[in-house]
Image 1 (spheres, rainbow, N blue to C red):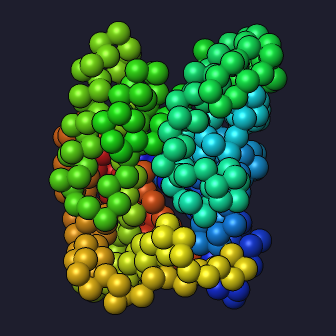
Image 2 (cartoon, one colour):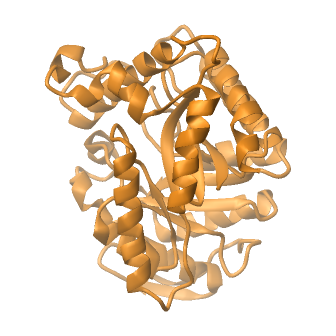
Length: 347
């Protein structure tokens, strides 16, 4: 099982500037590369300070010039906000800039807040049809001349300029949760990205089973890969209460996620207040004690034990999700501890 870093600039108040956050993200990436991580993943989100990435492309292109081995992952491009020609061209350009290190993830999108501003109020739940039309169109554009007449997009004969370095295409990934998403990804030769969020490892097992069902249904397709993305924080054995700041921080992250996902509270200059803890009084999965068990939080030995279970399940990639509301110094210390004391157990 290999490892990757999933990271964004995240801003919780105006005490830290965007340039400093950018430099912090670059430092975490170089640490991950030196530590043998396979890929750095950066997503796409709009007009929200808690996850800053209006496009993964310029960030990944910059990181391509600062690194030499780590792969550059768009995790993920939100299908309803793009045109297939633009996706094909920009992703191919990233592949050229990085000399064949691009990984292309795509998703249907989740936040109605974004859909109201970038997709004319399209219901976020309807974004799947854009994803299903986008994937084969992008792949065709990478191959050469192609005309498209679909439900969402229509354009005359065109092609991707430039063409990607990786042939026939860069690896493509689809964010999946329900069985139909897994089936679509596998049928179209895409790898699968899954996120158990606040659920325990039984959710990882369930998602892996959905993936295997899709693989079994498509023996005509080369077996794709599956990646698990999970909030991760490692603390030293010498600090038995070191899990608490991470669990509290991740709880704040999810309460903020809830506020944005609910799309009902006021937004001020890109900030939303986290939903109050009282809202989750009957939701035990939101408690720090529960998050200590479900998020990948623990000492190096505890983390290794859980990840060995993931490896035994057949997970191909574990993505260390560093967004957690904590300081850069805390994130850096955790990442270094993971590299020094967890990664060697998998070599």
